[in-house]
Every structure is written in C-alpha cells, then in structure tokens.
Image 1 (cartoon, rainbow, N blue to C red):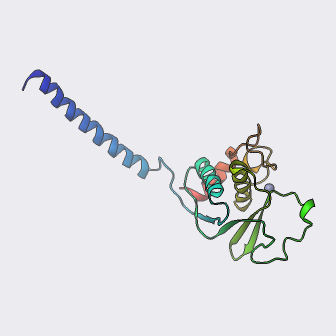
Image 2 (cartoon, helix red, strand yellow):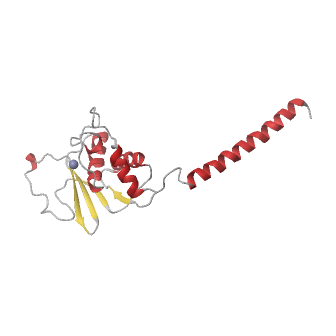
Image 3 (cartoon, rainbow, N blue to C red):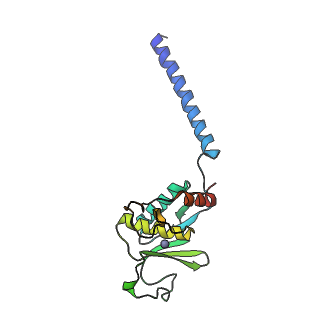
Length: 176
Ligand SMILES: [Zn+2]
C-alpha cells in the first residue's frame, strides 16, 4: 500500500467509526428523553380549513415539543354555517353585532367544535384556529401570542407563538 492509499484507508475507517458513533448517539438521545415523545394526543379535523388547521397544529406542536395535536375526530374545525354540535339553536345572535372571529364549543361526550366566523388569509385563519384550540386546551387569554384576543398574526405582540407558561403547561400534560 502506498502512503496515499493508507491515508485513504484510515480515512474510511475513521469515517465509519464516526458514522456509527453518531448513529448510536442519536438512538440514545431519542430513547433517553432528549426529544420528548407524546403522552396523550388530541385529534383534530377540518373539512373546510385543512391547511390552516394544519398550520395551527404545527405551531402549537412545535412550541410544545411533541406532536400531540394529530388528525382525529375529537375537535372539528368548521365554517360558521349556523349549526354547532349538530344543533341549530346554539348560535342565537344577530349576524352583524356578533364579532367573534371564531368560537370553541364543547359538544359534550368529549367532542368539541371550533366555528370560524371571520376567516381571513391563511395566516389570520391559522391564528384564529390556534386561539380556539388554545381555549379547548384550557389556555387563558393574554395580550400576546395565540391567546391574544384580536386575530392579528402580524401585529407586534400577537404573532403565532405561545407564551412560555403555556408551553410548560401543555408539555407537562401531553409530552413525556
Ligand atoms: Zn378567546
């Protein structure tokens, strides 16, 4: 073997060892609590606002650190067609003096509906849905982040983000 070939040979061995070590390290890291895994999930679906709902779920999952919001049938996100939880006697209000952009309802038997009354562009609608999911997740109103009251995802204090206290609360409940 020439010197050059020996250098190459040792190079390959070193690269193999480093590769195996990184792989083992990654397995240990993921199995030993480096990345949180999901303890409990909440199933969400949306016939009308699929991509906006996905965006809202991604934002919340991303901050909390485990994929606890999944597609499922516990929460339905829908447009405001005047019917809530299969009942048309719940939304008793004059159309034009009701200015909620969205509302979350508990239907009983563990099911929820999010009614989107004033959708906007994707970002605004995602913010409305994230806010209402926040209510279902028992988060309280705040002046900043998704629990700010006005759907203003581009405003200085109302971005699509979660407060640290809300992240901690959701992580304790849904991640391990
Ligand atoms: Zn609210």
